[in-house]
Image 1 (cartoon, one colour):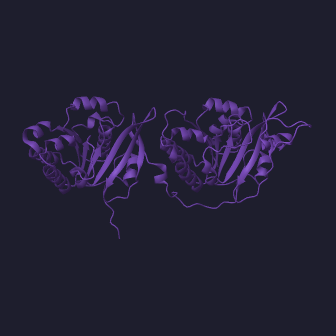
Image 2 (cartoon, rainbow, N blue to C red):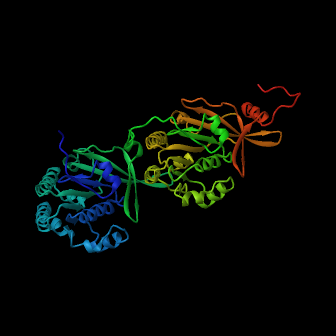
Image 3 (cartoon, rainbow, N blue to C red):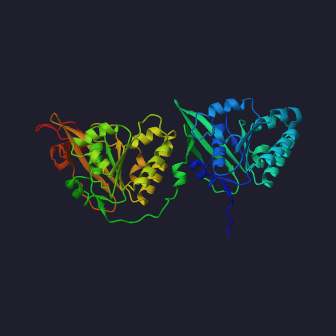
Length: 486
C-alpha cells in the first residue's frame, strides 16, 4: 500500500495540477527566476490562499524593497487581503539580522518568529542574499539544513525565492525537495511567461514547460495540454450514431451524417464557405445536445449576422441554451489557455457538437509551432471521450489550382473525416466545389459536387465542367479545338 503525502495546496489550480496536488507538507522548495518573472506575486498568492484555509504564514524578506511598497504593488491584485496582514500572514524584514549577525543571526530570528507566529508556511524572499553572505558552500548547506530541520520539526512548509540561476550541483539544488523555475522570454515580438518543475521529490508531476500569465486575479497557470492529457481523462466509447452537418444532401453523401464522437476537418481557401458550413452544423444544436462555437476571426455580432443570412438564428440558439459562442481575437493568445478554455466550456455546458473556427487561430497562438500536432492530438482525443462531435476549419493558401496544400502534412492522421472546399474558375464564372476526401470506417460518396450558399443555407448539387477544372488545375476549360491538358 502506498502512503499518500499530506499536501499544502497553492490555490492556483493549474500549478496544483502540475505539482501533483500541491507542495508536500513540511517540504522545502525554491522558486527561481530573474527579477520580474513573477516570483513575489505567485508566492504571496499562495500565502493568502493558505491563510484563507486556516493556515498561518511567516513571510521573511531580505530585500531592499520595503513592505509598504510591496503592499502597494500587491494591492492591485484581487487575491490581496490587507485585513489578513498581522492576522494570519506576518511580514518580517531580516536584513539587519543577516547583515549584523550573519547566517547564525538569521537562523535564530527565523526560529524565534516561527515559534511565536506558529507558522505553517514560511517564505524566505531573498535566498541570493543568504548565498552571498555565506563564506563557502559548506556554510550555505549548514544554514539551509538548519532551516529545513526546524521547519520540518514544526510541520512548516518552506518556500525560498531567488533570482540566481541554480546549477545541478549548487547547495540549493541538491538540498531542497523541489525547484520551480519561472521565465519571461521573447518569442519573436511576443513575451511569453513559462514555468517548469526542475526538481520535485515525492511527487509525480507534469514535466516540461507550462505557460502562465499574470492577471488582476494574480498568477494563472495553464498546464501543457499534451502533458495533462497524454492519455484521455476517461474511456472512449464506440458510437454508431450520426450527427447531421445541417445539409440533407451532404449528410447522405457522408453516409448519414458525420460519425458521432469524431473529428472532421474542413480544408479550404478564404471565402470557400467553411464558416458557413460550420454555422449550419451548429444550427442543429439543441438544449439537450448543446453546441459550441469557438472562433477567432469574427466577432459574435458579425457571426450572428452571417448565420442569419443562411437561415441560422444564433441569438435564439444561445437564448435557449442550445449554443455557446466564444470569441478570442488572434492576437496575444496562449495556446494552452485556449485548449483549457475550450475543454472547460465543453464540460460546463455538456456540449455535444463543437465548431472550431479555425485551427489557424491555434497555430498563431503557438509560441513553439512544433507543438501544434501533439497539442491538437491530445485536444481531439479528449473531446472524443467527452462525447463531442468536432468540426474544425483550416485555411489553405491557394485560391485556385489543382494542388491541395495541407497546413500540416500529418493532419489527416489525427482526424477521422476530411472535406475539401475549393474555388474553380470556369468560363469567367467562379464555382465553389466540395469533395469528401475521407470518412474513416464508413462508405461515402466520392463525387465532386457544386457547393452553393443561399438564404436557405448550404446546398450541394451535381456538377460537370467545374469539377473537371478542379481536377486539372486549369483555370478555364479547354475549348473544342484546344489540346487536352497533360
